[in-house]
Amino acid sequence: MKFHLLCAFLAAAAAASAQPQRAVFPPAGGEQVWSLRDFDASLAADWSPYGFLALELRLSSPQRFDLRLHDAGGVRSVRLAPVPGVWVRAVVPLRFLTQPPSQGMDLASVHNKQRPMVFINLSGAPGPLTAVQQIGVVMSNPVGSPTLEIRSLKLSKDDPGDALLEPGALVDQFGQWIHDDWPGKAKSLDQLQTDWASEEKALGKSESPYCRYGGFPASHAKATGFYRVEKLGGRWWFVDPDGHLFWSAGIDSVNANVTTPVQGREPIFAALPPQPAPGRGGASFYAWNLSRRFGADWTARWIDLTVARMTAWGFNTVGNWSDPRLGASGRMSYVVTTWGWGIESGPMGVADVYAPDFADRIDRAAAQQCDPHKTDPWLLGYFLGNELPWPGRESVAADAILAGPATPLQSALKAWLGQGDTSDRRRQFLFETYEKFVATVSAAVRRHDPNHLILGLRFGSSAPPEIVRASKTFDVYSLNSYAYTVNQREIDRVRDLIDKPVLIGEFHFGTPGRGMTPGLRQVANQEERGVAYRYYVENAAADACIVGAHWFEWVDEPATGRFDGENYNIGLIDTTDRPYPELTSAAAETHRRLLAVHSGKEPPVNRQAKLQ
Image (tube, rainbow, N blue to C red):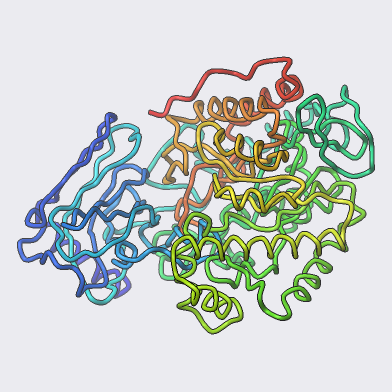
């Protein structure tokens, strides 16, 4: 046994002599609260000298819970998803509770924080921890009355490190969670090969509800050879290159490079893929299973299978973050995720539009990305970015700019605030910066590709009205809307302010199990995921402004977390490359109704999913 594991097990044995504090999360909800003395009589109320909170805990189910620290000045909270079913030491940096999050280019990178034994989401209002009185835990919509045990709570100035406090692997050779069982869990490669062959046989009998470019064969509009948008009879539509009405039923992250970090966590894996995953590194059990299915040179056959699946399930668009080889295959509509606009390097995604060479850099980025696609009839359009994290948090973004290195952006902000530093003036500066950004980038994209649509920036649920107005330069306004139905208030705002078609860039539903958390919107089980899909998409399609909705994402995230810790059960297929039939069959049924529902000829379904 490795020395660090031995130390962890000895520490666990010592801690086990103490009686754990236990919470049960009932279906009705409610917070369990303890005093500091319940954990350690020596714990100080003033936590400001410390940098880290270390908890030894065991959570029975992979459902996230909120850790709430009741300070005299207010409640500070973070959302935690520890490795479930086993005792772990999970460490929470206290800055996550005391400082506003300001590092990252989009909402996920700002709010998701990965640790070896816990996925942390920054979800609460930060503030000082100088008079901590109580510790509470609460869980939204708990399924199955899960339990949480905490046997140790310690403060530390230095990071003590996360640790698995029990022996044994957590993930099997197929990437499945060992400490859970479910119908169809793969027990052998022979079982998987039988299931794979059965699915391929069934796919060979399926037919597409669409014409070649994904439009509805019975509809007609002007054909231009490229995708476009048009308002017909008061309803917005995409129109495909052949002149058929098109509603974009898409899937994001159609990609085999689904990796989980390995370094420092090797003991939790029963086996690891023989080759490290490309890109971010780590291990991709999904890719390993594809190599088991198709052999070492599996890419071409995976692309064929993916197109066949999407066709059978009624999807017609390869969405954001997907393998570009799918679009290049010339068999399905696809989007291009663009880069290089300065969002990636700017504080909180604010590009430096005041840099003297900004326009030249934008033009070069547009030339590199758009020139190769400008004659491709399969391209639906370009996304310019994703979930900018600063709208609604302009003052925090301004602080991040001021705290960063000297740049033209910082100089411009300092000059602006020199005439008065108020919340309203900070907002106005960020809005004017955004206007310069979208005008410059949109012009460059159209200069290098006048044939394709600009699909917008995929805002996170909502954006201030000033941002919506400045987005009128886009052909389509896109937003990611994680709820049980679309954010109708935001759709109505877009309709009133700029009257543009709206594309839902992301949504999903998951359920806890298989070592995975349920994602951003939880339902009770796999069947209810299909129910939730139908309700969301059909009610979106019933709106005259909405021209598409893209599910996030193709395959489940790893049970041990992706690069930022997310481990959501949100795939159309699992890590062993087998579909969730409850979801895919429901999607196929809804997609057959899209033309009638968006035309207003049939009502959307009204059955909503059960959450518990």
